[in-house]
Length: 170
Image 1: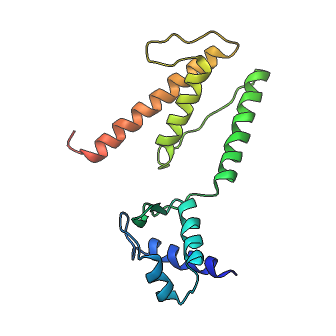
Image 2: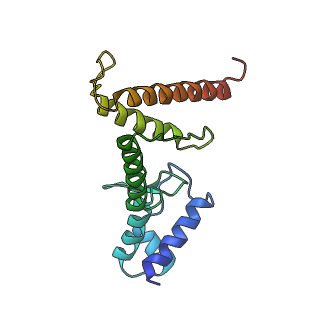
Image 3: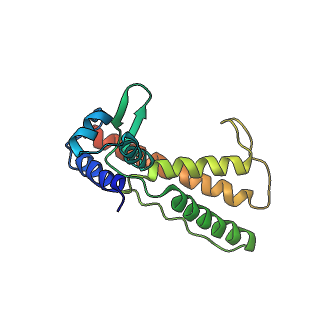
């Protein structure tokens, strides 16, 4: 194991344990070098960069590194490849005239983002730039419009659930 990988593990543990809180500036590189007995500042920087890529830290030029999340992001290439593969399956099913089911788990915390991505993709497919635009006709336009209607409905239901959770008296 490389020295920076050990630091990544140590830093991640400090973040996930709550020792370093969201919004908090972590110790400076020099402080971390001294604390961990590391001579090279590049080793500490490399460890920080891994955590930036994971979405746990954010570095701000001249200010330092700050904790921005407690939820590490999976490998972006793997995630995007998976999304691409799923979208290719949907497009193939549409082209072949097959029925395809889209299941949306309302309890998944990533759903609001996923819904936005799906809405934007469908709106682009239909040629809808603004709310007043009419969807362009196309081979699968009816399917895309119906899917967009259903996704918008799910988003509306989620908004109501979120609002009710925040304001239980409503």
